[in-house]
Length: 358
Image (cartoon, rainbow, N blue to C red):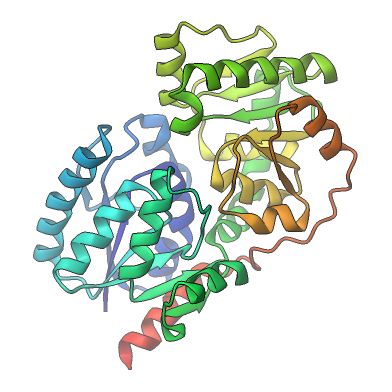
């Protein structure tokens, strides 16, 4: 068996790291193909170094672009490499353009596809990620679902049960493996003069939030109100896309918000772990916050992580973010983590070994 692991973004590097390390431990024949969909060094290279992962065998340097252009170039370049390497199976994770291109390239040349974190649905077709994950699911041979909800989504769409494997979420593995190392990074709090449980963490990057001037201005206003209401600083490691749009729209960020460049994984994990509340439009951060026991408000109208809502770790933003924060902070943080015990990487590799040998 030979595995091609295709990734292109910070969350993919983190969530596929347990599978990569399991391949290393079991001496499985594999290689990493990096599309470089995230083009900032802090958004990618540093994660390989911190997580002690081998460098990718292939880096495509695709960078940013319109969805069709970016996906098309990836598809062309990935196909060339797969034809050369002839892997038994391609693994993709999540819902990015890298996932779509990797899965399509493999399907066209009859290479089996494993989709890690399959079955997530926001039921919002205006999200490019929703289209990507649906297509990837329906052309994959192995669908590694993180929750029962995700499994049920696939069954409702007519996907054969024999293709679906319950694996939990590899983010639980990554946090379990790295939280002790991250705890040594408390200087990040000192650097920004932050106290444990006395600050909020903010992330924003989705086009629906940052590419719309009125929406972005509204969010900045609501976030500033929260900072004044609770008298807590808010730290915002700003995504390159958000930074670019703030400049284009000539929007002012409140002095109460601490802006910083994208951080390394361990520093960011430390900021999450010690925040009193996280405000984010990221899917992965909803999961990480849930596992770390930190409440989260998702700055969106929907989520493909409904288990975070049902377990009580997360809520969707209303038109009154201050009230949302009050409601969240009044609740206990004793929810049960729905994402597994931190052995998802091993489960996925054992499943591939078993089914491939059969």
